[in-house]
Image 1 (cartoon, rainbow, N blue to C red):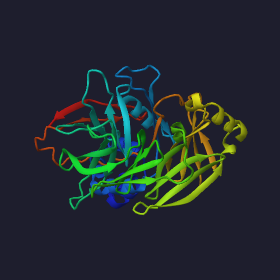
Image 2 (image 1 turned 90 degrees about the vertical axis):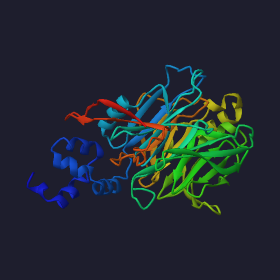
Image 3 (image 1 turned 135 degrees about the vertical axis):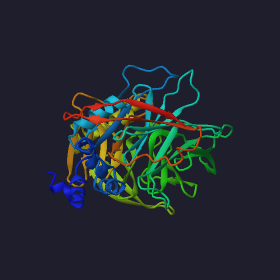
Length: 415
């Protein structure tokens, strides 16, 4: 083995095909392997080869002025069968005091729950693989409770240093007909309020947003999409394709997703599930990409489904058989009669997750379901040597035994 890995190019070629979890174990072999796996050029190659998602981040919660309910939960659903990440997530995510906001290229953004005693939210950017956590605290700016995350594993500038941005979208304090944007940049370590204002009266969904190819997209309850181009700080409003629904609860049949760097809009329009692709966000132009008859997903007939929708408006939030949860790389994630499942448009395969676990329909906030792809890329904090006072970083000295169970010693450093 040592003879084979004496050739650094060959070692890099072989190791870069392993999963991120296995590479963390390989770091325990020798200092040489640790140095190789931590090298930025190796991290770049591994990141580019590990584009398939490993699992789903699933969370259901309710916020009632700080009253935590015992039936709230957070789960990691493995897609590739690797249970080690499930254990890592289960032990590392601070449930039930946190709410997941976004996942982007291996980083996760979550915030603290709103309580009666805490008015200022803590926003945390976390890499579960490296156990880096950066806690962001807003100073001298007004932020809401909905945050988007954009991660640049190999930098967004000529310095090629990993960086990220967190964007908060909220109503201005004295204007309920528009939205403002507040941006945090890891390159500066500071929050700034954008001068851009988006005029839109629609209410936003708390967990139906996504970052795709330089733009943030938020789905509204009136079937529009608010866009924000993060570098130029330009916003806009896009109308979604397909029929208009009169009842605001029906929008739980829709979700946003991405594939090949394009925004996708998924909607259940009985008796079909349709996937639209936004080919040009500036014009905009929607193209119908997929459609499939939804009757094949379950035993409930189309007539029975329509009857329940039309004749139960008072309980319409609990009536739907199918909820659209997410879409990623030609796979749509749905809940059918409460059971989370995936449908692959390439293979036509329907797969169910979590036997015995059901997503609730009566929640005011629909369950959060986000694709997750592990990465060894660091968060990137070039301003750490400066005393910015707006964030603190914590990290774990993490090692793995051969059963894959993490052993951590948490350390914290404030800046």
